[in-house]
Length: 199
View (cartoon, rainbow, N blue to C red):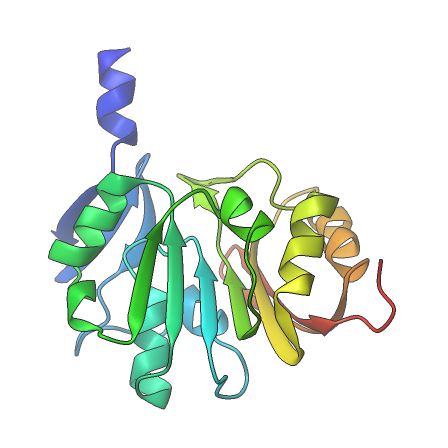
């Protein structure tokens, strides 16, 4: 039991010359600096500059930093439920230096239920270790995300290639219009806009 707890706690360390955030042995974020090379987090960016963005599953802040690198400062809210990850994001990955980023230490599902504003982009990257968080593809959560997305906004959704992938994409398509599917190694990133008249 102690060994399992040690393996699942978040850690930041340098591997092959780059700083990474690992949870449960799985890389969740990487430092975006001069050594950064394109990865799945680039695919998570919307296709055009949003007026504001929401990142569900902030992790170490790779997406927030890439948005800032591409478009400059824009209002971003990052939601991350694990206080240990938030501490690492602030102190090891430098997120405290991004004045335009607001970090909410909260459960994404509960936070979305009470979200009273809309965003130009919503990035959904809700993994614990290598597993998609339970409820991420549930109807209630998908409705909450659609409600919080501006009519012309774009949602990106990180999925892992598996036997369930087609069903997962169908669930998303119930509430959103799928615009593109990007494949990066074992990940499939869904780009979608609000479906007209969706449930």
